[in-house]
Length: 68
Image (cartoon, rainbow, N blue to C red):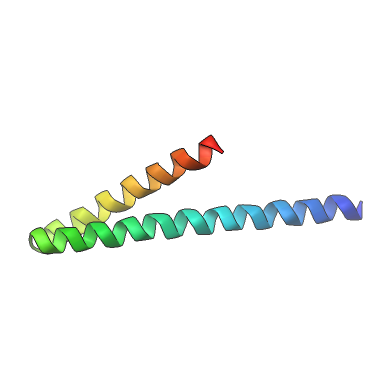
């Protein structure tokens, strides 16, 4: 029973690491999108760039995670 509990904790840790990787990846995409939007236009363009960058990064990371 103790081994089962240890395995559950290990799976929880792996899930949190995966979530941390996912969050950091979409965050990087959001920052890049925001920067590109700021360079090319006003604050509306920057926000649109942020949303597009975060979405593209999240989808890209999700596809890579599913292949493993």
